[in-house]
Length: 177
Image 1 (cartoon, helix red, strand yellow):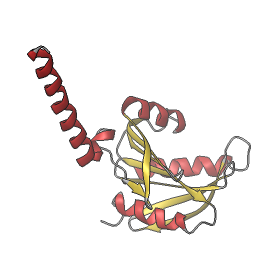
Image 2 (image 1 turned 45 degrees about the vertical axis):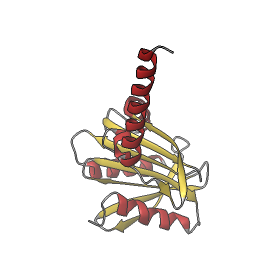
Image 3 (image 1 turned 180 degrees about the vertical axis):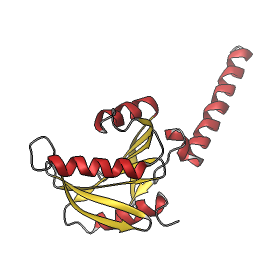
Image 4 (image 1 turned 30 degrees about the vertical axis):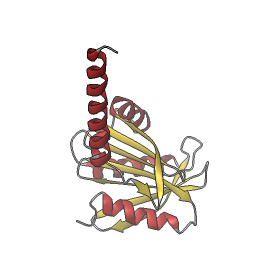
């Protein structure tokens, strides 16, 4: 075999190994500096969407003309839970979370809105909205902190895992710092 081919293959293997180590050791690099827990209550990640695709998906959901997501990370876990982390223009993400809650409350009794706000809870420094997805009977939680809006699709209504996951996430995203 030609030495140049062997050298090219060895160089490619080294580069791939370094990239794999960087992504494994620094998971926040997956979403342009955004991060999410490696596991959700012991359930591993099964899908990660970052970059332009994540921004596009987040803007399609978050009334982009109001919010304007500039960075995003979407993580799905093996147990079906999901996290959407979005960096918003202007920096005050709690304002945007409040705006989303207001929109949900305005339309929750119509067929337009599949969510219903159940309650607002204080988790450390964060005001967290808990909403029911009427299509799936799952609890969703969302809040703003700094320039990030966090939206988590959790578990079925009534599951004790909802509060466990919410405690994990609010600690992970700095509500208790």
